[in-house]
Image 1 (tube, rainbow, N blue to C red):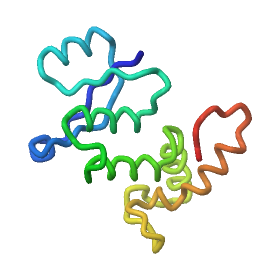
Image 2: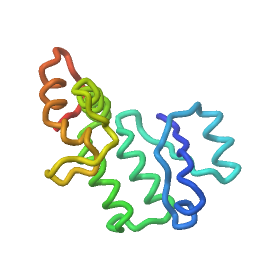
Image 3: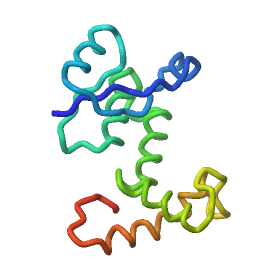
Length: 134
């Protein structure tokens, strides 16, 4: 079992019920945070960070088919796994592009997302890779 707290999304987002990106913490820190009213999530080891983020949003009161939950599902589906975004960002930077600038004409929000196909191919070519890059 893994335990997560959620990065603060700011007062405006918190007011509207958004849950920040999860980060792993110890069981004791989780228990203290949960007892004091912070957003904290307990999840099985096999859950990805994206799945934990969606689970937390639903536990915070969002309906499973709400806009917030669908937006998270789309974000993590586009990322394609926990290892994919960092690899795509690294390739983007190596090509002397700014990963956080706007994407190209393909409709991507960020420039690093334009490098997702290359990142998938790079991860797939690595031997003994256990990451989900579908």
